[in-house]
Image (cartoon, rainbow, N blue to C red; front, side, top):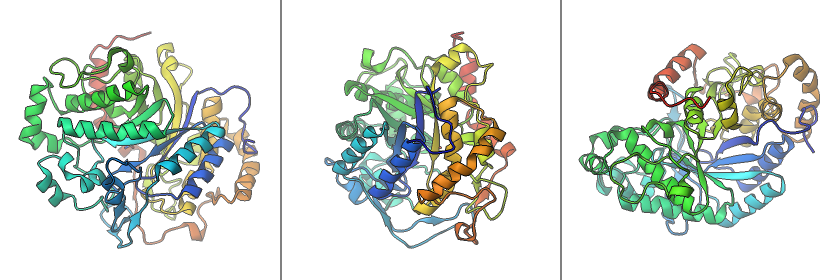
Length: 460
Ligand code: ACM
């Protein structure tokens, strides 16, 4: 049964109607995950990308590397709030999913039409890995041990990245073999986002390896690394999904990894190997989506300004831990993934849309509910019908939807703002203006824009 009040009939506009849930920063017990799957099914969504690893925690049981969960799955405290006035509490946070639990989740979700796409985020967002296995970090195990004593208790973008030695790639591939044993989806997430290049740039050994491999810079090194991982997964019959940073590494593409075997082990020279069958999750505005489509990648659109459900829902200072730009229910309803004027070559490549639920500040089920609902209702209609929604029509159907959410025990955000128990007085956030974020996105995606301008043939 689909949620009352939502218009989800006929044929869906998009094949990939996804939600990404960050269970790395905040572990959710299995009953919460099963409930989340039920709620996604009621919205006729069909992909749950599970972000299983990040700087703040590793949640996937890996039999060959037990310290990933034993050490990487526990931190001594967590940041409270955002920005310079935030602090770290001393409440330990831990949790892991056993492989048996995740197999159950895959089955349970599959019975409800939902594919679980696991995500192991490399080579950045690596602090939890390095707390457990410092030998995979940059600068030698002793130095890493000094820098990374446990998964990060802070939020933000860490400098810690994996090194690019062969044993590190072997480790990542071993982990992904276990991922493939548990998850039956044909797509596996390999992250690729926000990998800071400072450590690679400053490390003589990394630079030696980069030169040996004939790679011009750290962006190519990242693409090479991800290409190797993608090639390994191709051998397991999987293609990858990665964040749009994946495309930063110069001339990539080529045949699907399955056809070529991807970049050969120890390859020197030539293009790094993001295979053409890699799916690009485009989160930093339209640039990655457009470049990805031009290069022949399938694209999942998840622009933060329309789909990041951790972003604040209004300008009201009473919004709990206000971060990001304002993303109101009406803003989500205005999401137009493939505007009518979009060229055919672009429309053809957009396989779907995804709402991303980053969980830094969503530490309880109630706070997750508040962030996700009712915005997910508008998102689900966009995913099913295409956007934008006609607001006045959606608005007339909202009461039935909100009533249903209430009946399900979902603590959604009231339309007129947070109730007193949903606020977090005294916990600071960092609200952003749309203008400031657009300027930041322009800066972050400058290299992608250069590639786009660099003469990749229009497929139109
Ligand atoms: C992302 O928001 N770091 C993909």
